[in-house]
Length: 488
Image (cartoon, rainbow, N blue to C red; front, side):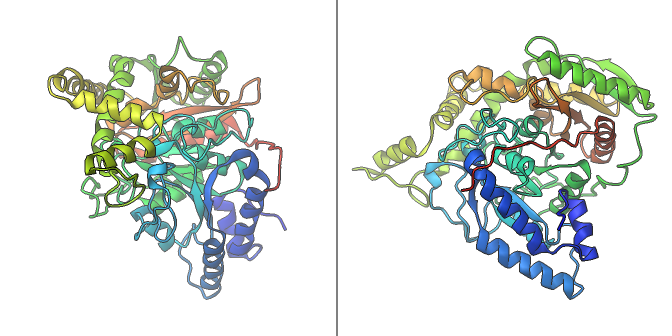
């Protein structure tokens, strides 16, 4: 039996009767069995729950109850999305053993679409990181080279999709945590417009920046998964009330007549030559296909990283105050309530989380608020103004997704600045709230994937996907990693 390797292909095979939902699930479970000892993409595989869901999906389809293109498709979830009855830890010791009594809205949406939830994937603790090395339960590794990182913080989701142990996955993107791992693993990753995908049930890192989105093998698959999870949700006060674009409406329309801006600030020192060369080659191909290509300057992008690392830690400091050992999660006893809280947080949080909470608390403290947090918010306003100005001149912006390919595990653990620079291309879209996505365009001389980023104005997903689909077609990227398998 031939198992398709895309969501769209699997959906067609389910409907022509050549495979069943149980077949699809068993294929990803077998793949996980062969690769997890090397990759550690998952924290928890719900084999029994997934098999029950796959059997139910087959029964529904046989009865003519077709819920759409995700019906019967195995999907993985980043473990910062609440799942009723299934442990949700955000890769932190402070939430070890926590089983939510409810589903996140995106999980409810997937279940209603008939998707089969395979399990929960690894991440940097509370989504704070760019390599998935900050997980309290051990790092994940890159399917293309198991000595390298898969990116972060959604590295487990990206590794699972790249390895074939899920047909698609959900990640969360606060400063590039979907797009950067997608770039490093040769997958497609999408950060939608802020507010279009509900954050209800997402364990918060930085509430004004966090956004859930899909990681898949193709642009079409990403559109299918996005359509299933987005829409207005009254449970999320920041949820956009509509109307929503159709990301799949123009997938085959090409780029003739579109205006594409190449961001000059997202190149130069610190960018690997192979990355810059591959991106430049793709821009030239887009121009040959009829796009008008112009270089655009967004000066505020040069200080976006600095602003982000004040705003995000400040919001994290506030959000993570709820983890105090009183209501849920880890509790380390002390003689007083204050001592219990201090011990719980000291032992429950890892070093990177503590670093960011301390930085954020300092930035919000009396006497420093305006100089740090206030100034960072003014930079954010400048970025939004810069982006709005440029999107008056072009339809989309393009750049590398990551300045480098996947780096060696451990290479940046002791150098926070080098790690933070991994997100230099992706952070601006989080600060502006606009959509952006990464598409694989090839491999470097070491056989490591290179990602191409497409950015669009708010609610510009239709045009963004249109350009991304053409990038995918021109790149012709269909390589898959060869993972040394160790059954486990």
